[in-house]
Length: 237
Image (tube, rainbow, N blue to C red; front, top):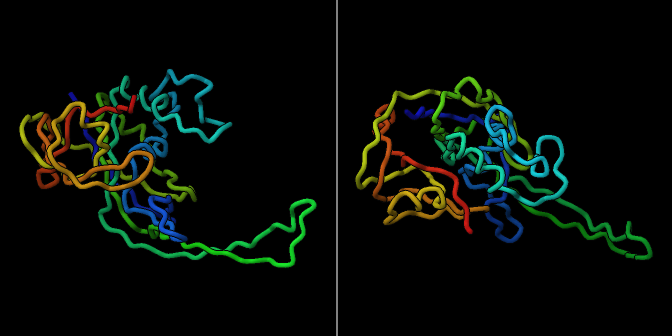
């Protein structure tokens, strides 16, 4: 038996992550990657979920280097039977902020400059009160363990999480279309994918409007939304 949770996020601050960089413009796509959600929800390096993360890979108190360790951190969730999908926008608005900085060469020892040349950039962020939705599929009931408040993006923006446990959905097999964004690495090993739209974003570009063949859950509470079954975290070898 699988527990399926429909989760909604409401932003209380502007959310920023650089999905794409166009010259001096840093744009935030209105989609939240499922890797980011796992960290934000506290599923990584938590005694409640993953109990066998090596101490040298722990991010609980201190991050000694800026090197991602997605495989080491997410593989224990496969062992726990917990999977989180990316989050799609229910409705959102964007704000454009301009920031400036100065050339600080005069602070460098033995280097002189007569000019202090300002520069600038623009960040397109997702505004407060924007809402997103995603799904959690778990082999055990974890609703009471999920946090009410989380932090997202480079600014650690505050967001509220609302969790609704859905009725048990039978597993069906056949040709179907999933409109919700998915991580392609997590579905292509267990499903036959025919067509999709790409959402370019690091560290793994997502896909949506995916036509595929395989096993899926048909969620009747959401206009018969279809979510692939047997999703797990896979990584490039």
